[in-house]
Length: 367
Image 1 (cartoon, rainbow, N blue to C red):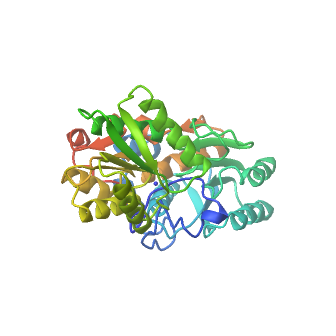
Image 2: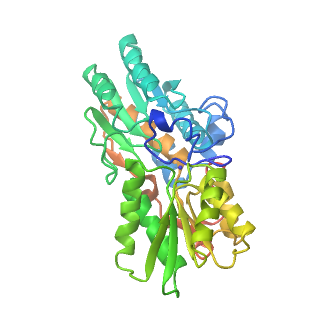
């Protein structure tokens, strides 16, 4: 899922375009998604599981494949990391790549997909949608034209936020960590952070009150349902950015001085929470939880500033998306739904207590 730190935090609509310069968040500039580093360097940031599955396989790459990637924006650290993975895999798997940047405009992305279909120049589309459900008709049109459509890269296609398999018509494969799963992981972190406290007061900061965030919160509630001692006493939008999250946290702390935990849906917002917590001098009282596993967040957890974060792997996402796409074009076996996190032996969350299990892993994007 930011940047002053960035994190995919899902299903952006045109209305959100202005405020979601990310969770994926006000990110540092990527000079064109996927063009920030060589394929070898990008591949070196992949997890061993993704590297082996996509870059070391024996499957034939003899047939050249023409790929188009439709991305909400390339000016975003998280999406740029996905682009690095896509570019590395395309280079290794005999595929050309053209990137279409929508500038967080869902209507523009819809038109880009239609125009690309009309050119007849592409074998497969990789779609990271601005609007998960709104992109549906354009995707279906592409599939009808014989183009293999793969979705994911932070956002699913369709309106099913519980499955790694897309329910959008015409999508042959998808790589995504479902929102509901991210919520359950957040819930488990909350339970761990609340250990020994009864009651335990929690605030949750979504980026915006949109369907994807509601699906995430449903996952949180499912876990907390068996912990009556944990009470979510506040839920306020943090707009996927540090400053709005700081202001929201300041208000929450004033209204709930006994607050124990603040969980966000992006590491970017967790940075803002940290500022407010420090300003209120309650670092020893309030535990901070982020989402997306960026470099900044992992460092904050290792030094004890944050409690934990939910892990995401943008470079791996890019690698798997290309693997699904080229296999589909070449009529080779492929997996319809990939959750990068479940392919790893690592926990789905990162805390100081389990950090040793990750070795020297430092993240695949700035965070």
